[in-house]
Length: 263
Length: 300
Picture 1 (tube, each protein chain N blue to C red):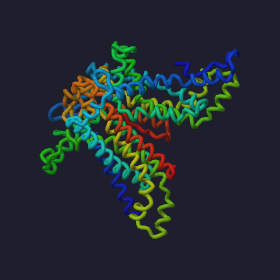
Picture 2: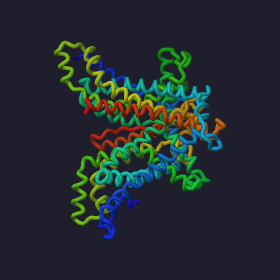
Picture 3: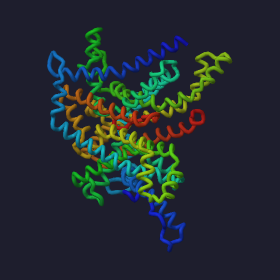
Picture 4: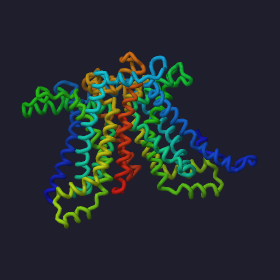
């Protein structure tokens, strides 16, 4: 077995190299702004660029709104399906997986066509309305992860018993949901929230096609026009992703952090 | 959206109780279905229907046939090639890594570390990933420069180009490999140690164990995961756009240009382009679900 273990170590080592070398390369590149010496000049320029602050604030606010709306949509639905409509579960699960099947660019193409300024619901008519549409797009993108996280959380608690207990003590539906169910799936909701944040914060396709000033399109713009700043931005983005996933691990021990979606 | 919470307690007495119970029960699911209709079903349905219509709204198959014109066909083919290469590469390497970490007899810290890191790396995609690879394997990137300095070997004069099929596939693998690690880990957990011991007792070699036991059991989840990776890469836009601009004509970038400015000069052909993408990702996801159902018999 000794030989097998050595092979395993070599594999892990090679995998580690493949993942760390690009990060190292990016970091090294980001320090090369001044000729001949390493400096953090690129970071200084990026961080003092007003557009950096503006776009990242925009994306952060959007991500938080996405999380709130996502939770409000998913938690009652998942709860209700478990409690009263178990027959609908396959249908609902299938729908929540659709955003993984239909590419984001196709979805946003459809939005642009059916919510254009001459339609019944002109969500692309004004900037505010487009912000709203972008937020709903992100709720859609995050739906598979949010639903899966919450549903897993609900599976671990006894929904029926908790509901009956709450109601026999006189709680109405809002109280049951807010003060009994939600606190019990807090960890699951939080892990879904961090995943959502990681997906939304640097998303490019939807923000760019809906023409909103989000962080993703800003990254792309800097990438097309500058040399060293993009590397600094990539390192900053990686730090944000790492922070989200780290927090997710803290809040959702044992739950797999399966992810994809911002490509 | 508080009405998602459902009915108030105590139905009005005039209606028979089963009627109100039934309707109130359904009300709880309404917000979700309205959302699904507005942001998933209708937008996609519009494109699907539009793909079968001409400019005047008449039924036609012209658009679908036009997808086979050389420029569009080649963009589909290059997308399929990049997605397949990154999916197969990601699946093979991701499986090897996961197997080494889980069943390779390594220290106990290796597995959780790999899993955490995979969670991060599978999310590190899009525009920043393109920057990272440009800084590493671009013309003045770290690895390119190091190879020249240390070995006098210029990968660019040897024919490598980051803005090409190979470069894009290599970049995609950065999120494909960790995604594979996350998907396949449960299947590897399901390989029971007793199977290996039993086969060894019966005189099987390592090769025979893999050929007749492990691989037949693992092949549905492996293939299924590869299909999921394929769909994952096929829909990707941002990485390719930031990496290559428009020099590599993959189908998502053609669609991106079409949405921005009708480069195909035919709106309905654009819908058909989207329809073709839904068809391909739909097929590979359907196959994934089918294979997952088969593999769950063994792996739990």
